[in-house]
Length: 98
Length: 317
Image 1 (cartoon, each protein chain N blue to C red):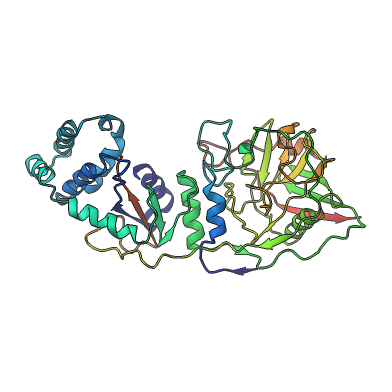
Image 2 (cartoon, rainbow over the protein chains, first blue to last red):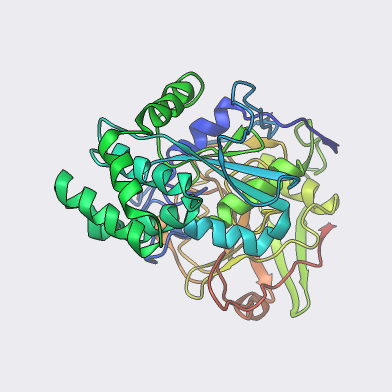
């Protein structure tokens, strides 16, 4: 085991981009609330009657990495800030109100 | 972000600060600029966040207004917040803050994608994994403390001439599973490797739904579909192994060939899942223990604490 540096793999972005309610599969959940899970949200549209054998599989290393964006302007007095200046986490929200 | 802010201040207290930057999506949000100006005008009088929260809270009210109606309503909001309404109205009228807002927008277009809301945690963009506060909170945790991962795929730890069982030990008892090493050698090897290395120890059955499944194997305990183990394994779908009966042990994958550490046990026949998830075993003892796991789901209000895997023991015969 070892710790990796933080850096977002493109693959991950591609993987999660297709997911609706969170880190999950892109199907309607039986539950109305936006669940950040899981097997309940599996595709149910086309149960395949006779799945074909896929044979032995291989594994591939995919480090979970996150990369900081260096071009984000530093926080200044012109920013609207809520919370202590020495907080270890700074969450920037880019948004509008509509 | 009012709801998210309340949630994160509750979980993270003084450890977090929030910064709001304008990203008016002018092509699809016709009232984005004027409402951003209202927040700025309130901010000029020291009440940015109050106006920010009010605008989100009353989105339904003002969304349908014409431009004139909206401006009047915004002035009413300013009065409600105890602002100098005259100054506020004048600044909206004159577009005092429009340049500042558009400067935020222009700057952002140099490095970010145009989507709202977009979150950035310590300068790391939050991937589009949904807006559930629980998931965002988990992401913050990952940025602060990168998970331990393997930097290689699992070594071969099973012998295909032998038979394997896994005993999933919980405070409520043992769930014993025969493993299908012959039909799913790579994924059984993956599971056995993780179990023997203690990967699952202390992880929760974070998603348990009676008549459906019990799921575990995500160190964040919320079902993020990330390769926490540090690798993905391909699917091994054997047509002879199906979810037509209850008690199957399968790896959870968010997309084809993305098996990692997450797994689930089925409570009932679920033929809809056939062909989509790699079945690696079947419960042979302790189905009553599996069925006795506390129903829960991530983020559910008032949910009981989930059951925890003490360890998973592998036996070779």
